[in-house]
Amino acid sequence: MTLRLSSRDLRVYLTLPGGMSISEARHFLSQHRRWLAEQIARRPGPVEVGHGVTLPLLGLPHLVAPGPG
Image (cartoon, rainbow, N blue to C red):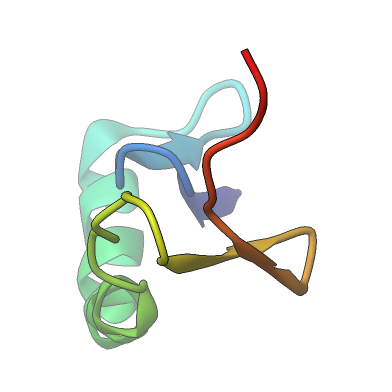
């Protein structure tokens, strides 16, 4: 069984092996509720984009500035 949280839209994905019951899946989720809440809380909030703002991209800060054209 795997449980993951999408980094794009915070959707939760639970992958079950064949033959596993829904009640077993619910039990697994209830056991991992705290972990899931912690992962959601650790996600950064929305970032305002505009001139002069520094955004993280691939682990490095990048300044938003107008360019030619």
